[in-house]
Image (cartoon, rainbow, N blue to C red; front, side, top):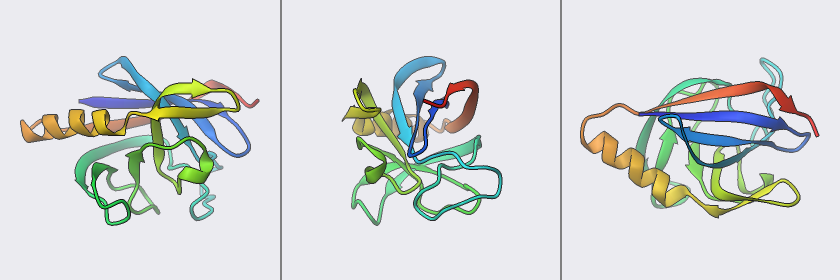
Length: 140
């Protein structure tokens, strides 16, 4: 399975995009701001664009099984979970089914995405996340 995050809106305090599973729209995403190469502010920076393996395991912070994005350079414990604003993430990718005014997202897609990834991993399939920055992305 390939999950693709296409980052589309690059704002001062957040990055908005879409998550596609095997090429089909799954939900919307919200992340911390994308910063220049080599620039990282702890808990305030989106992970670098790239290709990452996915796993499902128990999060020590949240106490439940969640999708984890593995082997992210200079980041630890990166997850895909519900949330609405940048206040709800520390480098993780927030996932939700709806977009709202004020560049927020809502109606978490966490349980469904975790289930999709878990089911595929249980069958021996490999799951990857590709994160791309849409160069046509808006800055407003």
